[in-house]
Image (cartoon, rainbow, N blue to C red; front, side, top):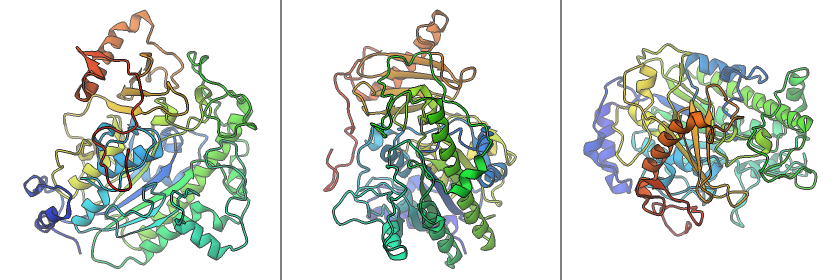
Length: 517
């Protein structure tokens, strides 16, 4: 049924003509852990905080199916997105590269083609590659190596003749109804229950397509299936049935730092329902959070359906299954909403991996892993479990040694950054290991330092604390080392340089007909 290592390498050698830039010698069999290629099921949500799961310690969230997946796999507790908005995060997932190297530093366009692309690379290893749900690519129907994509683009139309597959289905299945009748905008943080029958919700539609694909799968090829939900990204619109599960539950209040008095503020969400900042009151935030959590519970039910179908088909045990998000959601923490921030609500993400049963792991199932990881690490992990060496141009690291509990040299910090968004000075780069976080604001030279162990809510900025200056100097040097390759506009004489302007695309961004930075 599967493909042995020799066949994999031969196929990769043949793909030299396909423009991927592989060097066959660098893709020789490496570990010999298993002779068969596992199915790879990548389940992704949009804008889900790292703390918004029961297994992550949030007792307010109902997520039994995802919690069970974590218990049968591994939960990475210090997982981040390298750029906390949809398109740069998805570029990192696609390529296994850091923002500077794939070239998208903020909310711009995912390029039409990269040297390394997850679906194409897995396809070249013999996988049948299928994408379902939100892709957020440009052009919206580009495949990046998928055999096919079945798309829910959440109402986004970036070309005049594009309509997502979900909208086509809706207009066929529910002609005369309005898919946006709930009345909450795509970036609004207000909340309402879904106004239409539950079966028409995009969360159900995405799961339906995934279940159908698994149910009908009869190929001898291993399956790479990406299932990408458009929620819990706003609108926070769960069905009433699911929202009712949260009656009487203790919804946590937003966390407010002692440093955020100077942030831009808009206290009237009815005037600007998509405001990126504002003190709208605790009750408003709790209501948004309750609907947001219920949206996650609704997704959790659909994840349960997908897992159940994998089990019925006998594919579950042979599958590497991942559950991640592209980025988080501030939900009123520090008077901030939506994403693009360095703070935990925006940058920390859920990150779960269940290995195939045939993979001999030393780490017990259900173990927590605390090394800092990022979306860029998934592609090299998928290559490594297929006994393929990781090309040098990929920045991510295979997560297998961590799950094997091997002694290995791991990165000290994860780098996170985002080009200017919402207001001019919101342009920053951060380093974190999940224990400490340093933030450098490029246009102002401001700095922040947080002790995430004792202050996970980032309430206390230690950057000016006299007892933290040794740590500050260490982090400045680490940041300068990280940015050094960018040249003297970023680091000069070993010192961080205050920039005059924001940069959305790095010089490494691939330029083609449809993507011109």
